[in-house]
Every structure is written in structure tokens, then in C-alpha cells.
Length: 262
Image (cartoon, rainbow, N blue to C red):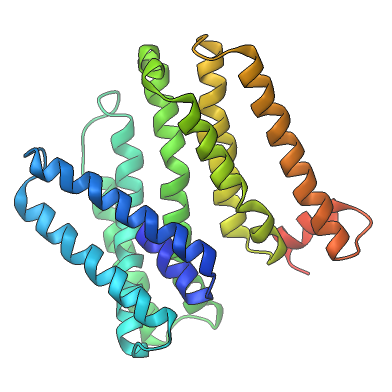
């Protein structure tokens, strides 16, 4: 997910977002490496993952600075499109196992659809909007993978409420703050995908887990109220300042442009 989002933001030259996603890729890879060292991840899978991560970081770096051949970049975009679209439904399905049968069918179907979509995009048989739609898939699948993380966490909390006691309130607060800080920029440049992912993570990953922790009495009322007031104030200020910058009478116009365009 971070690698796909890194490609999306590198293409748009969003420096701050590129830095954030790069750190996300590196930190996730460190965790994967720890799993491999602990023999919780097979060596072949670890090697394959390492190659993809290294290649992704190098290609995104070169593309960001305009040093990459367009054909190579197109191949990379096709790769992450197929990969993201294949992984997303499989992860969604796996979240609810064993309450639903364990199956690779969702991922397999998505893989076939993704390959067919990319092939049609390059064949010139789609309408003018077709290639643009296919090109946006990798970004949206990465965003949806990112958005699914809090859903999976909350499902785990629902099944095993005691797990919430192992969460750090400060970590959840930082998650809320970190994603919340991205909201104004996404709103300002009218990037619906970025705005959706940031807002979702702010509300359902950071703040959502804070709510769960409060309901299970693992944090104080004061901490919960401070997080709630701070969140409402920040989102309100982001909407108000955006409307002021564009000289609109209402922040609702900013949201309308974000969703439907100007």
C-alpha cells in the first residue's frame, strides 16, 4: 500500500507525501525483516519482497527527479496496478476468515480482471477516459488498502476486546494527528483520493481506536475529550481556511469542488 501511494505522490511531485510514504515503506520493511529473522516468514517470500521494495524505491526516486525512462515507469505502474487490485479483495476476504471459507478466489478473480484491464488499456480499445481510469486504479487500491487497516483493527477489537489493552493511546493519537495533518493539503489541491484516505485514517484508525479504548476504560475521560475537541477543531479549521484562501462564502463549496470538480 505504501509503495503504491509512494508512486502516486512521486508522480504528482508531492514532496511531503513522498517523504511520508517512503518512511512508511521503510518501516514496514523493517517489520518484515524482523519476521524473516524470527523465521516467521519464509526466505523466498522475503527475498521477493525485498526485491520489489528495493526496485520500487529506486524507480520512484528516479522518476521523482525526472531521471527515469517513461517506458520503465509505465511498466512499474502496470505492475503495482495488477498487484494492488489483486491483493485488495484477498485481504478484505481474509479479514473475516474463519467466519467465511478460506479461499484465494477473490484474489484470483481480481488478478484476471486487473491483467485484462491493463491489456485493454494498452491495446487502444478503450475510450479516452479508459486509460486514465486504469491509471488511477493503483492509487485508489493503495488508498483502499490503507483504509482497510482500521477496519481490520476494529474487527479484531470486536472479536477480542482484550486486545485493545495492548494498544498505546499515544500511538493512536499520533496516528490521528499524522493523518489529520495531511487533510488540509489534500483539500487545497482538490485530491479526492488523498483526502479520502487521510480523513478515513484520521477518523477510523486514530480516533476510532481512541473511542474503543475509552469505551473499554483504558484511557481517561480527559484524554478522550481532548482528542475529540482537537479533532473537530482541526477539521473545522482546515475547511474554514480553505474557503478563506479561495475566497468562498462557505466551506461546503470546497467540499463540492473536491468531490465533483470545479
